[in-house]
Amino acid sequence: MIREYLKNNILITDGAMGTYYSQVTGNIGTFSEMANITAPEVILNIHREYIQSGAVLIRTNTFSANTKTLQISRKELKDVLIKGYEIAKQAVEGRNIFIAADIGPVPEIINNNTEIDKQSMMDEYKFIADTFLEAGAEIFVFETFSSTDYLEQITEYIKEKNKDAFIITQFVIMGDGYTRKGISASRIVEEIKKIKSVDVYGFNCGTGPTHLYNNIKKIDFANDIVSALPNAGFPEIINERTVYSQNEDYFANVLMEIKDLGVRIIGGCCGTTPIHIRKILEKIEKQEGKQYKKVEVKVGEIQRKKTEKNIFIEKLKKNEFTIAVELDPPFNTGVEKVLEGARILKDNKVDIITISDSPLGRARVNPAVIASKIKREVGIDTIPHICCRDRNIIALKSDMLAAHIEGIRNILVVTGDPIPSAEKNEIKSVFNLNSIKLMKLIDEMNKEQFAEDPYHVGGALNLNVYNKDAEISRMYKKAEAGAEFFLTQPIFEESVIDYLTKMDKPENVKILGGIMPMVSYKNAQFLNNEIPGIKIPQEYIARFREDMAREEAEEVGIKIAVDIAIKIKKYVNGFYFIAPFNRVNMIVNILKEVM
Image (cartoon, rainbow, N blue to C red; front, side, top):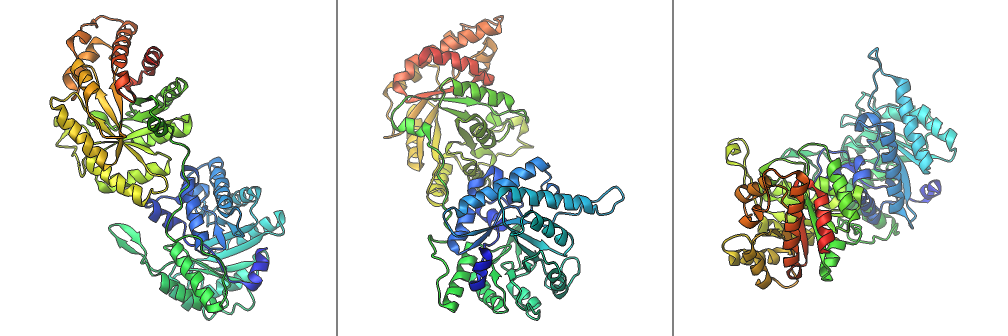
């Protein structure tokens, strides 16, 4: 099919995946290939943007997918490759678009004699090829190679497995006209022409379009099918980031000159975006007087796939009573206890898990990471807390983008507890924003980046303060900034419960009453004397004894929590339980009494 297309048409490919992925996500210096597993919707939408811009051939997001570059096992590599091909298939569904299995050069594997282990190299290429063949790939592109080493053997191997396979090989030519291994462009062409299992040869990466044009204009391509996918230009380092100039019209103009050399496949490499591809399409249509593709949407707008239903928000909007439980992320990499706690809570009809953000200024695992892991592995919605204390605006934006990619759609925004005084010489608070300003920032991002699938933002409400009216005034400001729901600080005092029954609140704002079960006499004293914003009545503390066994003390804590929950239930939209030391069984027992 692709052979027939090339007889009568110039074939436009996509542009860069790696650099455009970095531009879209802000993840600089990471391998986009791993996003096949961690953020498939981002890769899918990038493919779709290139297709909507005019690409007739897209390359799978697998250029760096090999065990040596990604430092992963063969099993993990297979998952990355298969998923990359499946995402590309999803992107082209219902369209006449070609998919090329993208294979980059495998870094040299050295044996014990400090020589290149050619057999291991070939085994790696064959494993990658076999995986793609298993996935159904019929078009292969080997790109950014600096020599013809391994290409004859691996392309013949593929043709033996599928005689109809269509194979493209592309070489990186630097500004001086030579590959990184010192082979000239003309000699590369001489060598690759001898390999009969290659259908197309060409050039990608290395330089911008003009340098590539100058380096290949004297080569006689005869009737060969040749490809050219140059970089957008030469990058600059700005603020420690690699940046390509936005020169789409210039890029497309030079690509037309390259096309006139007899090149039949054109597209882009590093630094090129869907806009570059759109400009190429426009130039070809104008030059040849025919329409190649209908451009379906405005370039540059990523059409993000909406996530599944947000059950938590839907229940609040329907005025259905909602249960949230807070778990603390671990101090180390041991996450199984948190995951098991989340599973127990899900099985007991809890609606959503909230994850605190290094409470009391003590470093714990990033809440968005734990929240996304719980959501993915347990299957329950989550609300990570985002604290302004530790991050500047850049880090906050980065976290919001990353959490969105991971499927997080509910966020609790807090200003954050202060750093303990003894540590202030070594640890600095940031507070580039406070909670209200961060809410406004998220509201702006919802309008710009997340318009199709926005965040739902919550805020903290502390009714334990002396001036409660001032706290309510602040709640109104948070609601104006975008807050839709509020989680209160743990409620213990009768005066707070009384205020809750009469307090005014913004229209459509939902409040979840905070309940924190105490677990012992010592714990009650600690909460009362050392945790800001919590005041425990003496009568509750007196119910505990210092010599109580754990089970007896927990039972007292459960009874107190049940009493408070019953008193506040008809004045709130739900409960917000803080599981003490992640003792989720206490929460389960409380729920049995009050729900």
